[in-house]
Image (cartoon, rainbow, N blue to C red; front, side, top):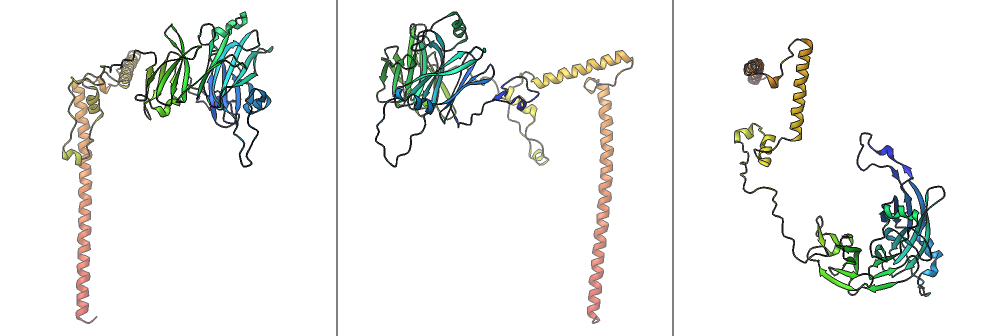
Length: 439
C-alpha cells in the first residue's frame, strides 16, 4: 500500500482524490467489489485475490486461486488422466464476479462477513472476514465448490427464510455483536445453469438453461410481493425464474431494444431494472416487471417551436473584405437564447464587481473628502460627449501624422525611382556612343 496523496492538486479539496495505491503486479484486474462496510475485494488475471480493509488502509488477505484449488483438489471434479503429449497446460483460473454477504456458513453456529468469489471455470470460493484481538480484521479461506465448467456471471446471497438479499450492510454487521444469525444461501448463476446452495461446500438445487447462454443475472424484488432470478440470455431474451424452485415463470424478447452482443455489459438491478446498451454510445433502461406497454414519448421539447427565431446574422461583401467577423457573441446569444435570455453567471459577476467598485469609490470619497476620479461607466451625457471629442481629436492627430509620414515616404520613393531611371538612361547613352566610336 503506497501513499499517493502528494499526487493530488493542492488546491483541490473535493472530488475523486487519490489516497492510496495498491499494486500487486498480478496482471489486469478482472473483478472488483466495494462493500458497504469498508472492505474491497480485487481479482486479477493471474488468479490472485486481494482483500483490503479501508480502515487502514491495509491488505488483510492475499492469495492465488490456483494454490487454493491445488490444496483442496478433492473438492473439485475428477478429470481424465489421459493427456496428449503436445497439449499445453490449462490456464489458471481467475475471478469473474465477487460479492460480500453476511450469513452462517456450513458447519458453524455463528454468522460472519463472507466474500464469495466466482471464477471463469465455474468455481465459487468463500472467504471469511473476522475481527482479531488487535481490533483489526483478517481474511480467511473457508472453502470452495465446483458448480459447472462455465464462467460464473453473478453471485447473490439471500436469506433462506424470507428470500431477501443478505448483503453485507452496516446495520446487519453491527447486529452481529449481539449474536444475530442469518441463515443464508447463495444463488449463483453461470453461463449454462443456476444453483442454490449453502456455502461453502454443500451442493443444493440447480437448473440448466436450454438453447441459450446467460450473460448477466441478479436476484431482483418485485415490489413487495417476492423475489426472483432475472437473467439476460444470448438469444436476445430476458427470463425470470422463481426462488427457490428455479422454475421458468416468464420471458420476453428485448433484442429489438438492446444490443444482444453487449448483454454481458448490461446491469440487472435489485429492483428489476435493466441498464443495457442500444448502440455504441447509447444506453436504455427497461423494467422487467412492467405491464408490457410501450412507454409514451415525453412531450417535452428542447426548443419551443412557437417562438420566433431571430434571423441569421449576415454581412456585406465590403465588410467581408474589410475583415469583419461573421458573428459577434451578442448575436450568438440572441440567436440561441432569444431576447428574454437571463444574464449569465459572468455577467452577474461583472455587475457585482462594478457595484463593489462603485461602493469603494464612494467610501474613498467619504473618507478623503475629495471627489474620486469619475467612473467611465457612471459618467453623464455631457462628460461622455467631452471624452469622446477628446479621444477623436487625438485619433485625428495620430491619423494626420500617419498621413504625413506616408506622403514623405511616397515622395522619397518617387525621387529614388526618378534617379534610378536617369542613371539607366545615362548608362544606355554612353554605351551607344562608345559603340559608334569603336570603343
